[in-house]
Length: 150
Ligand SMILES: [Cu+2]
Image 1 (cartoon, rainbow, N blue to C red):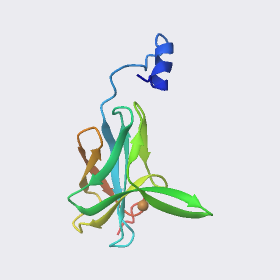
Image 2 (cartoon, rainbow, N blue to C red; image 1 turned 90 degrees about the vertical axis):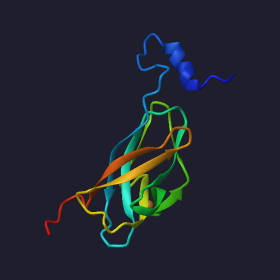
Image 3 (cartoon, rainbow, N blue to C red; image 1 turned 45 degrees about the vertical axis):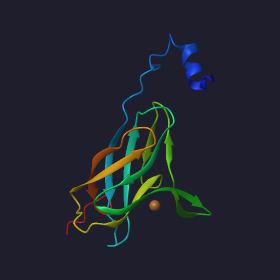
Image 4 (cartoon, helix red, strand yellow; image 1 turned 120 degrees about the horizontal axis):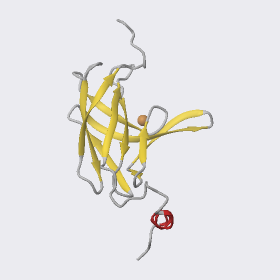
């Protein structure tokens, strides 16, 4: 049987490392929020953090009763141009965390229900390869970080 290099390092340093433990932190989605598009009909962005979970866990998709379809995207800069491409799944590591944030990895919500309003919430369900799905309420924010006071 192959010993994972991280586990091997843990075993060697075990007396000194309190962080080495056999039980993974419970899988959780934190700080989920949705940014409404500046132009009605455009996709909305969703951002969140994933913590915990078993080693090599993968986020394989998102869904919401308030969106027709949700894609996972990765942003990158190519030749000075900001681009993004869809990704099928995102791996996150044992005791690690992944962050979806503006300018980085993000989820895009297509066909958003018009009833979704700034200041409200919307349910997002996260599907994983080896863990049961998690549903959280994401805070809905306006197109910019600041309020426009209309
Ligand atoms: Cu995108």
